[in-house]
Length: 55
View 1 (cartoon, rainbow, N blue to C red):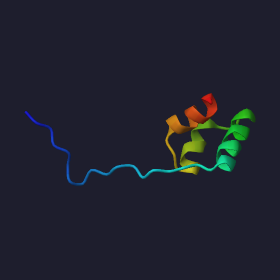
View 2 (cartoon, rainbow, N blue to C red; view 1 turned 90 degrees about the vertical axis):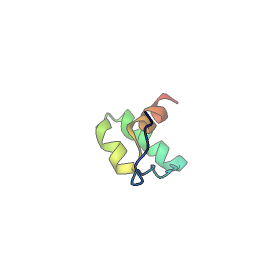
View 3 (cartoon, rainbow, N blue to C red; view 1 turned 60 degrees about the vertical axis):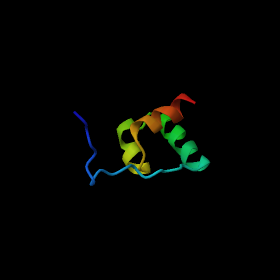
View 4 (cartoon, one colour; view 1 turned 30 degrees about the vertical axis):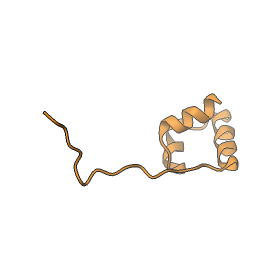
């Protein structure tokens, strides 16, 4: 049995954050702002925010 991707399947668009955006995210995390609002505001996934925080 083979699994075939739908022709309507979409890949995510690659989003590159600037150094200023990353710095702003870190500042907001350090001020204990809501973590869940950041991904939608910067149009990135939660894992991207975690990676920025980790590094």
